[in-house]
Length: 462
Image (cartoon, rainbow, N blue to C red; front, side, top):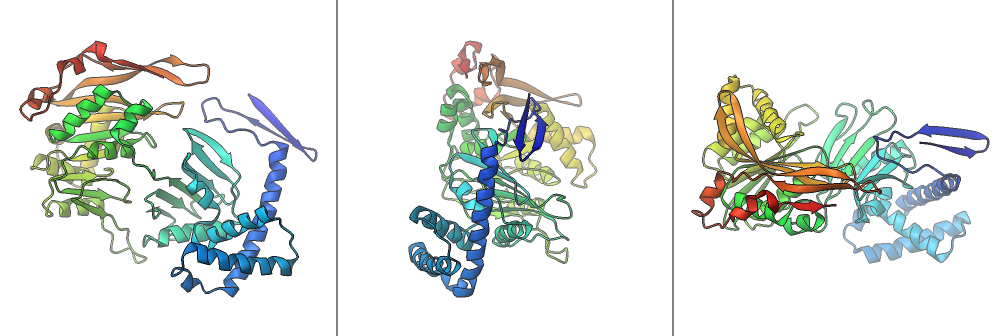
């Protein structure tokens, strides 16, 4: 598929890769709209600079937003009169809101952050912003004045959580006040302008009922996972970037008994555990002298001294996997974590590799025995080509045969086709295998009906 844009005698042609997310072409009207946006942005920046000379920034934090808005609106009116800029009432109101976003928030990003239909914000330099809505990428009209403007917003984000970004430390993970996950990377690593990625934090917590409603899994699968958590089985959630690992981890955590003490460990705190007794820990990067770093591994070791009933690690990436397995094997049953991997088998292989990153010289068979003893259930999640997230597999780790970890799949999602709109059709299937933990369910006072595991208990989904 090809499209062309003609403007002032210049023709641009771009080939669309069918394997890549489709982004609508830029029309001539959109180009003129961008010019108007640029002019308005120039005016906002000019007014913002003038405001900085007229107001006391340190006093802003002490005033409610309506009071600030009234005072800023009055000052903006004076500035517009001085500059002989004529705006109607709606334009002036919008301008006041935008300038307030610059003063109090994250400037051009604020409207995107307030839009609940947007899940990801991807900034590729000051003039290019994409957003994800309902699993599809689209170009946003948002832009920054220049690279300095974008850098100022990035600095504002990272400094709020005590982190830094500059040429000596050109990338950083951070979070916004609402918990949204942020990654930024700047020059010299970012060649065409600073890059900013924001994974928005859902304002409404997504529980297991909502995941069933969305078609991410079936009620039967939800019942099985509820039992897994209640029976204090250790769970490893596996999936790719943006597949919904953290969302599922949050949903599973809702099944933990409120009387238990939970310690969470994350690089950037984003878990939404609802229990009263939760101790949240977050890593710390090194300072400008390269000292003071506190890693996830340090926190896992410390968590063992905090009398936890369960340990929840947002994501294992390196040597902390070994300490996490040790915790799972030494009385902290019911612990949970996530890992980047494409299949349940790959997930266990990734954990084995991370044990090697701990610096401990352990034979491969011993490492696999540690994994087989610690991990009870692997839940694989995936993001389909139509943007929807599914629980692709629920598997039980059953032990070791020789040097191989043995597993059995309990449920899986099987793709069957596509609709004319490109939506994926498929079916959740029970494999017919009754897991070992089902035998212990009755002892724990949990009713797991044998019907849940019968092949005919599957469900179609669209």
